[in-house]
Image (cartoon, rainbow, N blue to C red; front, side, top):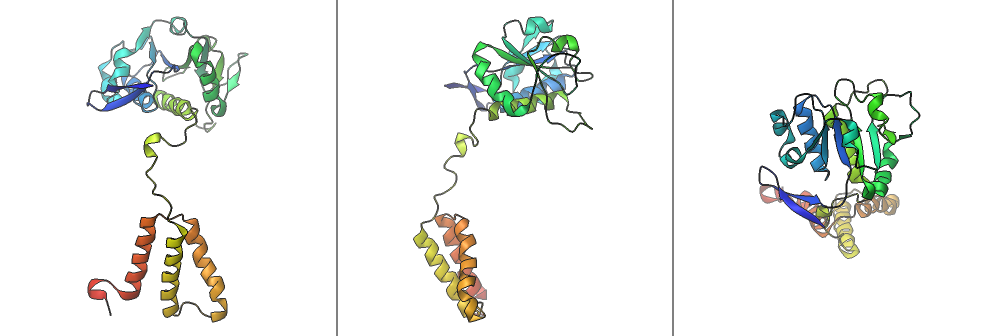
Length: 261
């Protein structure tokens, strides 16, 4: 069960109480990137932010504007002096990096990492992101159980800090298994019954017959099938069927001043 919180603009945000990964920014340089990372995190339900020795100190006013209302994360961010302190209470830690390392450490990809972290989340999990200029050092990476790498273009590995965090936040949210958010349920109307669809076919084909469309006559049956098949696959709603019939009527008889011309 989640609980509702309000951002600085008064918007209500649903926050999950379930355990989640800690996002750990190691020696971040720009407050703007921290704020943008917060924005991406909260979009996908992540609220546990840890900062290790931010270059410009903390709090940093430059983070607020880029957070776009995700100030709860900024206000509740935990500050640490070292990576060791930041991961001390965690049992499973990933290091996000695109660079090969001369280290004997497993590497995991984006297709499995979400499920792996969810399986361990009750024990405390987190992910390290390095500073903008040079990324994580080997000394940082050795504190992780595995490296997480994204399938980026090997000729242009240039995600900035906030973008990298946003990608991970999406991966985490997607791994829950729900393809479409609940609030989109019920948006699509029920599919029209076949009776309504049959009436549409009759209406359309009658008008096409009057217009001389079915020529030569020997091919009429095949032409009817070619008309009906895509309209059936369209899975039109009752309203869409009514609209389509209105279109047929307007084309055949005209509307308003055009009627009878």
